[in-house]
Amino acid sequence: MSVDERIPGKRFVAAIDYKSSEWSTPGSGKSAAWGDGVVLQVPLYAHALETLRPGKDIARVEYQTIKKPKQVHSLELYSVDKKTSRVEEDVDAVAKWQAALDQAIEHVRRARAGEFPAKPPETCKCPPWCHGRDICRIPGGPQNAIP
Image: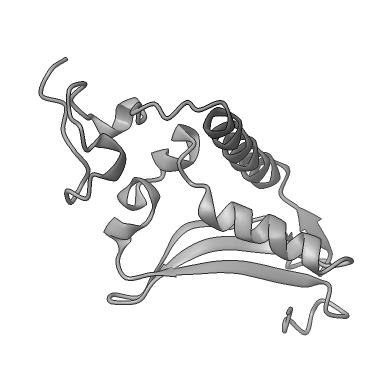
C-alpha cells in the first residue's frame, strides 16, 4: 500500500516479482523485452492484484533481483508532480502495461488452440532449428547463427 505521505489514503499498490538475477527476468532484463511481448508475469500479477483489491490502483510494476539487488522492467503507472503534489497517470506506461496484458491473452488464445510455436522475438536471436528456444537459459540469450 502507498506510504507516500504526499498522497492521501492508501489507494495505490505495486506488483513486484522477485527473481534471483537479471538474467532470470524476461529478455534477460533488456528493455526491448517489453516491445517483444515477453514481459508477462508481473503485468499479470498487477492485473490480479487490481482485481482482488477493488478501489486500488496499480502504481508500479517491476521485477527486483535478489542476488545483486536491482529494479528491472520497472514501469511507473503514476507519478506525483513535485510542484503541485498532484497524482498524474503516465499514459504511455499504462499503454505498455495494457499491451503486455494483450500479449498474455494472445498466448492463452494460442495455447487453447493447441498452438505452441517456438518463435521467440527477433531480439532473442535464436537459431530457427534450435529445439530449446522456448526454454533457453544462455546468459544474454541465444544468438542467431543463421541470418
